[in-house]
Image 1 (tube, rainbow, N blue to C red):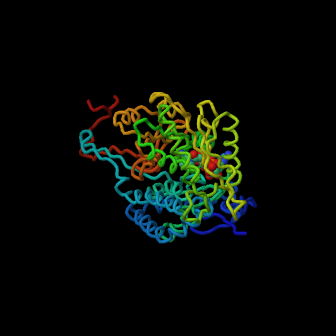
Image 2: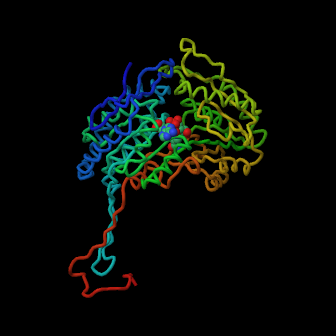
Image 3: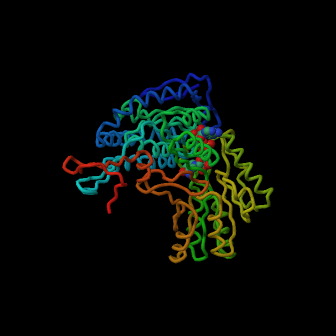
Length: 498
Ligand code: NAD
């Protein structure tokens, strides 16, 4: 059995805790590897290593740090096919989708190569008599990232690239369900010239996470995963004095207005609802047609498309989507489909009977489509995270606008319409963090920021873009004058600029 250990101090380190987790090959259902689950002592050893390496890395000029990232980009493109293959085999998504996972991460590395400019401070000449005032950004020291299974390349890179570009050392605790790619990325960073100890991958579960939260030398924690864990990490990080940004689950709606191009809206719903088997935090899981005629027309377009979805192995280039990540997750999603039927929603397309010939033990689920879902149902309120789309019919635009706005999650939302006024009103009033206008997956690009609202995001700074530089640095503000500017005599009143 292949063993996946940790990557600490620039080298592979076997686990010593005696605890391991299974890494599946979702397309066959087999266990393909065992991943080490770190103990507190192993996590601490990684932090000590990182803390020792960090000052010298921070002292390098930012252009030199950026050049390591540039070299990393070159190496990641060189190895793109192998990384995508490994990713697809551990996660279950198709290889084409795995390439997108990696590419969206690399775009944040590209953004982070701008760190010499991004970290520049502010300067005010003559803020007072003979006084200059300036502010500068300094790294925090050792910081950590805890990431989910569904984007094993993209999200680790969203976290670690800006952090290390700013001069921090990084402890990555990736998902124990698909740990192979994060280790591969760490290897490439070393090959690109990153000093050992600046990017460490410590595999593990709750024990490693709790060790991160309690470690006095970790100064910031970036988390992405489900909302209950996001909230737990946010609370624990605050209690131990760490900076935290914690992103959680989602229930993303797409509003379809009567004037929308219905076939195009249906195409968008199919890609955004079923791509990656619905295991995306920006997946559309709720379609909201406005008015009876729109609902009828949309359902007519959706049903044949869902029935025609091609579920395949992760390595099948013709597959629309592959298996789910684990049997436990498959059982959970199937359970939600059973629940929806029991709650009285109308299951128009039932994917539960899908069997993949030759891969009967793989974690496959055919596309499922519910109609007549209502806001009181659990299948509407809770995140399913599978290839299941729910149609909630709205009578009016105001009713449709209220659905995502009142939902406890607030990650992404989209509206399909030809009417600029409606779109503009929607963008302004909807209570959700990321909005698409005739764009079903409004995932902001690397130089903007990514973050949901309400229970989709705990903390105040978003991921990547300018916020990531703020998150991974602290501001030092200096007020200085030289002897010619110093007045004689003590001053007792509060100095002001009046
Ligand atoms: P998860 O919450 O199960 O796990 C995320 C991380 O937390 C993993 O590293 C895991 O090891 C750790 N963890 C799990 N249970 C823990 C516990 N009890 N205590 C401490 N740590 C624990 O999430 P997942 O299933 O890997 O990922 C899917 C979830 O992530 C979905 O809810 C999805 O919406 C969300 N997600 C959100 C975003 C976003 O940006 N908002 C992006 C991607 C995924």
